[in-house]
Length: 95
Image 1 (tube, rainbow, N blue to C red):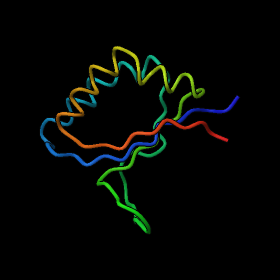
Image 2: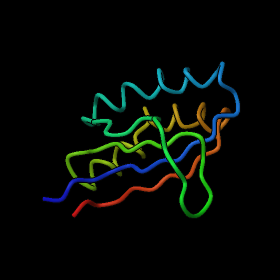
Image 3: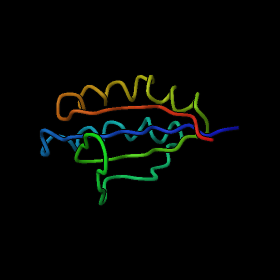
């Protein structure tokens, strides 16, 4: 079975309040077995438009990645993220 991934690019607008999103999202990440493969770090944008942070999160499968995003736990955290950051958010199935 193919794994599922969140591929997220984030520009934090309010660095003081952004950690509240991470704390609020933790229960969803734990519940759905999220595994962070990339969280910030150095990058070089060779083409297109970049954001400040890049995140890749691995899940057991595509449906689990989707269910985590739509879970009540993550949707509560998402509101905090949206208030404090701009993001591009994809859910993709791995090969």
